[in-house]
Image 1 (cartoon, each protein chain N blue to C red):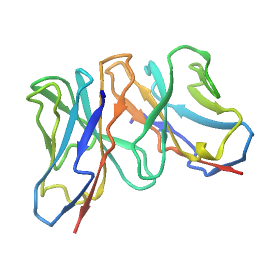
Image 2 (cartoon, each protein chain N blue to C red):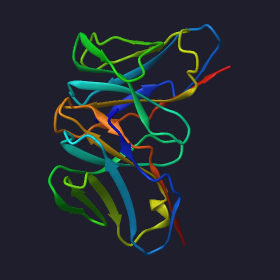
Image 3 (cartoon, one colour):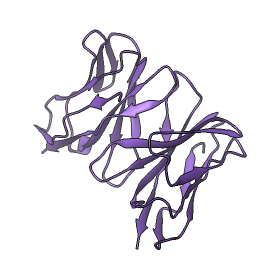
Length: 110
Length: 112
């Protein structure tokens, strides 16, 4: 069973701090990785995706990928209360299927 | 506006009933997917279709059926054989390999 693992949280950070969300995956054939944000009762919305080792930045968000360690992370700088949500990590295999982790609940306190 | 629509938003099913969830996309995406999400859980793949008139079982296909007669549409039927269907059902689509997958707003199904 190919798996994607995330700490369920909640991860609590103060407003303005950096939130660090982590994800590990077991399938070494995974080719790309996605971070989705899901507010309670809503559907997931794509935040970022990353294919290559290293960092990828988009505004306040930075995705980091380390294929050797099978580790993906999402950093959120200057965290806002509106960032409070569940963050889902997903890996895509060669067959184009996504495998999702269980999600990490982030709480940003004013 | 381009996007994915799902209907209904809420659906109630009686024991022994089949119900069909609608998913339509106008993004011209080739691939479409159905996922199930249980409270506090990640997404699990039910069925997927990478081309019209073809679809494949995902990890939890038992008790579900689909069709893909048009590129834009991928309805999911929850049959009476699905013993625990209460969940949040999400439809998604993408252009295929290496492309981002986008989600519809979801249908929340409750068994009475």
